[in-house]
Length: 381
Ligand code: SF4
Image 1: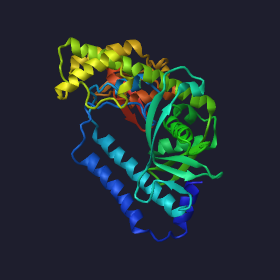
Image 2: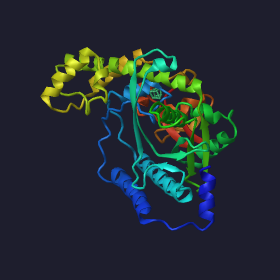
Image 3: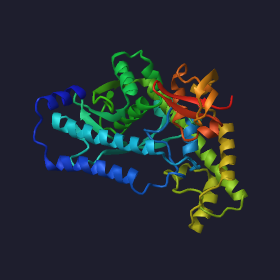
């Protein structure tokens, strides 16, 4: 559908590449390099409200993300990986436009992606909870077999990730589907839900298109719509959108207690109407002051303790335990016995190792990259 058509195009000798299409692709790559390799955006404190590409595997992570807590700045590896991802997307869109110009719907030739803002009412899905709003930008939408608009998300992956996705594409019972239920697949399901809820399309399926960074291979996984899985996502969102205002109110109260008179947020939450009355009053007072408040360790520690108490860790962490003693590569680089958490036995557990709040949930643990995939090890039991 996607990979085959691109390969056929490239192997048939290609076609004239209009300047406008080339310019858009180079603009996307340039902007990414500017963002990641130039003056970097301040990532230490950033409020991130739930979005389709967020961490639907772990509600706690989403609540932490919404509170502009201090996290580690991006490492060199992450900055390079972000650019790889943007370049893969630019290349994927360009090639599909060349291979199947009649079937690409968005982005337009200038690279303008489809941006959707959709209000969901959980009641429409048989779920309890208040309405919530999600915003999303979709990498690419195409005309599917039945003429409906379908979303595509481009992914740049390692050989390990690519092989898993490819195996998942051919086997709906493969572990990949469990591992990605709260990750890539959730993101695509949101896009399908958004296309449907906005009346653009029936969007009964979507695609994750992968490019392997090591070998240059491409493959895609077709994700069919699934009512139960969609209902689970709506339930998660309803829960998260109920926890966030509670946590923000708590934070405002903590700040007020410390005598802080500054705006505790870098940016106001996207939907201020969702802020509870108590927090709204405090925020209003801070807003008048007009200054930015950077937060401090004490505030972060207190609000983190509240989140830990009120928002459980994701279910996938329940069985994570130190189960392999005696490995010799310690996270701090020294040699000697250390302990390892099993994330292979508990499929979504690997998500914690990519989370910016690991230290808040698992003090003392760090990630060690091994050729078989990232694992967690610690010098302490
Ligand atoms: S460390 Fe794991 S459990 Fe904690 S917030 Fe992150 S993903 Fe969730």
